[in-house]
Amino acid sequence: MSSVDPAVVARIAELAALDVPEADRAAITAEFAAIVGWIDTLAELPDTPAPAPPSAALALRSDVVTNPPGSDLLAVAPAVTEGRIVVPAVLED
Amino acid sequence: MGAVAELAERLRSGAVSSRDLVDASLLRAEATASLNAFVCLDPDGARAAAAQADDERARGIDRGPLHGVPVAIKDNLHVAGLPTSCASRILAGFVPRADATAVARLRAAGAVFIGKTNLDEFAMGSSTEHSAFGPVRNPLDEERVAGGSSGGSAAAVAAGVVPVALGSDTGGSVRQPAAFCGVVGLRPSWGSVSRSGLVAFASSLDQVGPIAADVDSAQLVLEVLAGPDPADATATRSLGPAAEPGRIGLITQLADAVPPAGRSVLDRAVAALGGAEPVSLPSTRFAAPAYYVLASAEAASNLARFDGVRYGARVPEDSLAAMIRSTRSQGFGREVQRRILLGNFVLSAGHRDAYYRRGLAARDRLRSEFDVLFRRVDLLISLTAPETAFPVGSRPDPVAMYRSDLLTIPAALAGLPAVSVPVPGSGLPWGVQIMGPAGADRSVLAAARRLEAALG
Image (cartoon, rainbow over all chains, first blue to last red; front, side, top):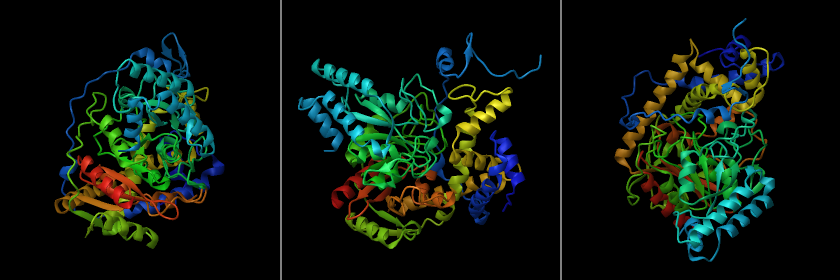
């Protein structure tokens, strides 16, 4: 069980890299509290661990890396210069 | 013979050309534009591909079972050269350079793509109302939703624009819209069809599947789609042999969750299959909450890549952090933001054990219960949705929307093949769902075919 308040929503929004505008904060908090109240059903799950289901096992084949050409990656980027993706400066001069 | 095989036969015999079929398909799409089923049509590309298909045919080349047949693709699957929007503003301007594997396989089998279909943004929804392009309307009653998230694909098939369309099913997104629109929707076993080129929502659940006019057409397309793919390490499962339907179990918890009108539809279907024995799946009550915890957690990770740096739209800001935050806040719609917030919440310090780990435990428990059931019965039956298509705009409460997925979620969580078969009646159609063990896709389809024939 968990209580949801505007501070929790603000912290989660920070983790999610999303803005929650001040004006919407109360409505979003109420909506979020209702969803969390519903998923709290999981607290009633019996504590005894279920045996690992054999059907969950899926044989993975070995991974082979096949990257598309760099030009394909650059072609879909919003801002490119001289073969590089442009972003605002991260480090100060 | 199904609608797709029939069209292919008429093409093969020369009774009709692919150009004619594609023109008719495009005309039908325009005549039913009020459905909002398509986010983009590609008349030029489709006509050129149809002309090529006809030319190849004239030269004796047969590309395969879909040679010259018009098909529509949900707009979260890449078709090289056409925009992939995922019905989101954040992907504005994004044009993939390569086909998704599923799309490439249809193309190799001769399919002609007429356009991309509308969906809930990033496939997150059960009504196709959460689309940046507006809601899809149900062809059987335009005041009602088409279901979701593959609502555009279901509407396009139900409206007779195409005989088959691709959708994706994470928690029911192929089966429920198929049920609402009165067509067939198939979720293949998880791991039987490559997801490479499907924009990821929840990778442990996402599956590509056909929505078609009939069971035969759905199977024909599945046979083209299935098989290993070097680009998707999880595509390792076979479809299994087509065993004749044997013992069928009726999951009592799912049967009890539907209103009387639905229950009588389910009873009709059970009778058409020669009866079913009641069986119990006790963890059903945890399935939908577990699904929303796990799917949202995976969505929070998968959608972290949409940051305005590498693809799609970008909102310019002075700092990188502000650019990323503004791009995501303005680019994602309300429902997607809600799921990303929920995903971050259930994964965050202090909540991970209470939600994410319990969600995983609930899924394990459900899988074990399915394993036990499949030692007693060969297949399981339920309705696809606890209701028929509801009016557009009538379900603003997210929890009410999430709860309505309770019948499609169990098979999704367990990775099982499941197909929705429409039940014709006097009013809006209901869908009946047949589920089987993972890797028993052809047996599930054999039972669905028998149900379809019996319900007539």
